[in-house]
Length: 91
Image (tube, rainbow, N blue to C red; front, side, top):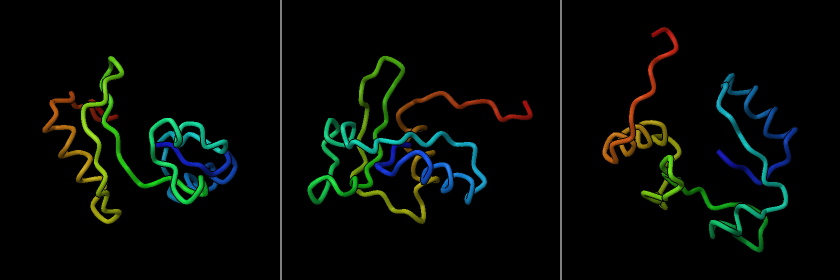
């Protein structure tokens, strides 16, 4: 995940969700510009999901992310695209 917020705000957000997911900070907006997701003059990034394989190839772009079902939608799309499942932490 990439956010245009600074690193401290991203850290606080991750802690509030009690998640170990990596949240990268793009406070300069360079990444958002490169991916074409900078909105309103670079004040925020559009909520798009890019599916990138190990070779760096963008396999799919979801431009209609639904916050309430995003996790399930991502898991489904990864399966459809044939991305391998990661073993559960207990395995």
